Image (cartoon, rainbow, N blue to C red; front, side, top):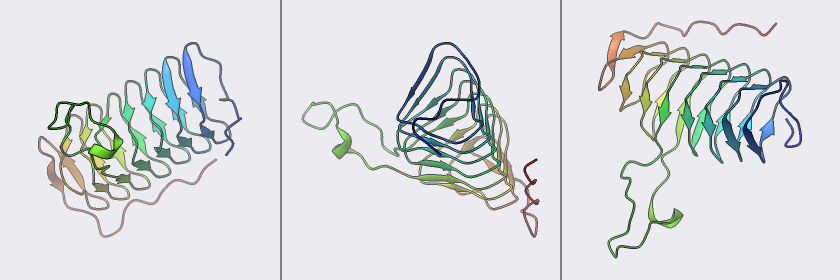
Length: 176
């Protein structure tokens, strides 16, 4: 990957700053990508923001209106549906007790990992400090408040298992 590489496609109104961009990455219009890493062959839809410190693997699909914040690692071959929101702070506040605006020193980053081949349904909210296992499925609109086991399917608010995890996650597809 290279910070000076351009997306494989043309699109209007994109902010792409200090991005470690893999080969053959497609980035839709009206996107904000800064200080992040995006793996080979990944597709980023329109109206997506990926913040500094986030990492997206190879051959992922990130659909429109998704927000990926600092501390999020999305491994290879993950599907992220429309409007998925990641949260990286368990106790967000605008100000400190003295009334001054918070700075980076005033809160604790909660890292999140989405393992290979997982699928996150549209509108899901993923709270910080969690791990979504390989091949897991998160239903549309789910609010994920705890880890999801590999191969498990969860849905609802808060997300609860619908199907027990398989003995092994589904095998990942080999790239073309």
